[in-house]
Length: 283
Ligand code: SF4
Image (tube, rainbow, N blue to C red; front, side, top):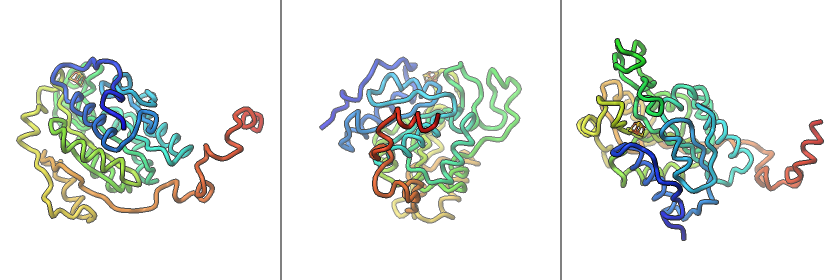
């Protein structure tokens, strides 16, 4: 039986009051609740304040290139589809630099869980505007206000084929852990968008801001209904934030659709054990 301590790495360097603290704790709690040990899971980080969790979480991790967490996670999953694989990324990393990877991961229903710290700014590089910021948001990179309209990650994922879409709030550790657990247990592509205040560089989208505009999904909400999920996702246009599992359906995953690895994962196949032989085959 693992403990929170088992998953604890170096002391986080996040600003005091940052939403990342709550998300980091919720991830650790979830891994403990799932009965996993640090060697039972692969975690791929993007670049950003969220990506710095690579040092704060004790597990098998990759701190990938900017925007490239998802293809790394897919590669791990293709090699060993029995292993739970999660990505921890920011909204800039996942919806900006890595936006194309997100779309195609959804299309393939790759069985990975993508947890997005959505704070609407590039916090690590001191507050430039990120893709989910509202039109007109003023930052040091957009002093006259951003011209582009915001990305709606929920609609994007839903209409691209994701089979699990959820939204959480960084101040609610209990709901976050419940949602992250459901996302990891889901077989197929899971997107969990977490509203995460950046207390240092985003003075608009604060804890108070989200408390006033978010609400938990009703108990009788039909999460397998595409139209309902689309309507809930579109509420982001009005800065209304439904919290909970917005969409979940069962469909074959990418690896389940590959006959070559139906019997056993690639890493368990004899010919993939001899790395030198593989290299020779290619020369
Ligand atoms: Fe958190 Fe913002 Fe500080 Fe980064 S800069 S650690 S996102 S509060």
